[in-house]
Length: 199
Length: 176
Image 1: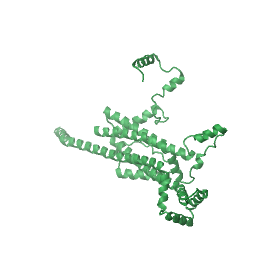
Image 2: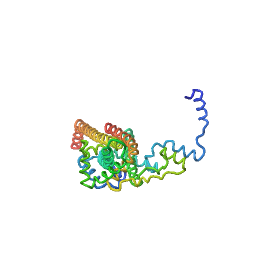
Image 3: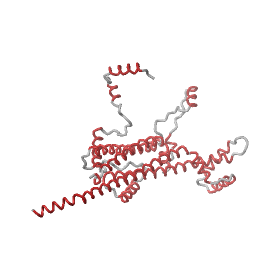
């Protein structure tokens, strides 16, 4: 029966992970999913691994998305300050240098952080504006991340549905064979028993 | 658009061809059915054996030819999926190691080309690796970000392979 076969690990090895990723963490996800679903046979095993892989990929993409925004934070702050510090009139080149300096020091210097908050407040803005600017500057990449995320989430849903369908079919198949057994085979068994007892 | 006479002439001429004759032509023609190379560099026989083994596991001990056929399709798609995932990780790791997917081309901007034509001086190539963040997790995130165009292309293959496998398994489930 197909349900009892498990694909060997040599045939379907663990999906490759990035060198910076933890195999233990991946195995934990895999183990938790297998414990939850208790796969029977090759097909369910394949779907379990698919779910583990897609869960891992979704986590990876979400993490990267946040990191991409964080990486853009300094540039975003510098760009924002350049616009806020620029007074009306001809463009002042020194404003750019000052904005870069403040954006660099913002991460480590508390006084600079306070000063930047003050500048932002003057224009009725706050730190969320910096996040918004960082997202704006990386919007093209974020959109690509979202497409990949949507695709992975859709495939995960599909894998879950397929597992349920397959199980449903399996359950239906068991029900049918059980019915066949009850309707016909029992009688045959009784005949067999009678024959053997008569002999 | 070609006229009916031209099409007929083309067909007549094509019938005269005995196929590629030179070694280079034969080599090129041998790649005619090459689609995406996702089967990798493993031999056809080895790949066929892998497909057959996995198909047997999916189909179980059935003798139904139809189920076996769908099991083969499912197995092939599953192995394609594994391969695509390897390639995805390889793309990201390539970015981690080199910072970009190809050799840097120093002359891509119009202003650089104009400058080169005027002065004959090529601009200094940008060291893509130097522009990568040094610390984790920002470095990995940047590598994934730079690999996004390739990841999106591979995602299309992945979706198709997954759909092929799911369809076959659904049919197997209903027939068993």
